[in-house]
Length: 166
Image (cartoon, rainbow, N blue to C red; front, side, top):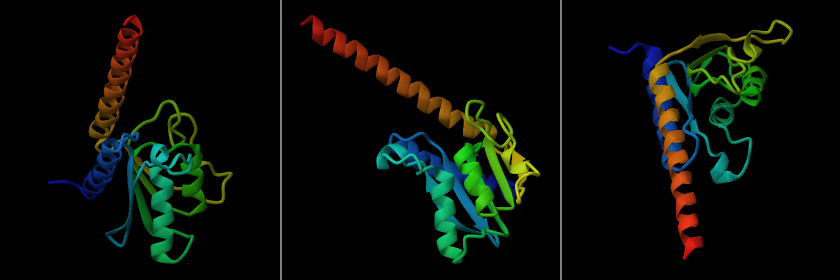
């Protein structure tokens, strides 16, 4: 039997799979309000060529439109990867009270890994954070994606080298 957090993280993982199918870094997010998903998003940075189209920021935008307010009080954001500085800032600015994430991001994570932006008392808002929900699954989709990307680039390089020899 899944916990509520695991169920919603599975929904975020479904969004991550949509991103992977598009060749995007597979990160997904959902926002829950009153036990209902009010926003779903996945990374679209490569598709849109817009650095702002991270899963979290797009989910926040959708949720604000759905609620009719920039304040996302009484919501929970589920995201498959620890938020980056931009997304952590958007979370703080939109007053999301709770964030649940799957895998840590040791290179850009600003919830626990590099910084603790969501729990810094110098800001006018702090979040409750739950980490590690379905961490293995959230990490594996990223590992698989980047492994396949490296292999594809290796094959492309070999192909170019073969073409140059002809």
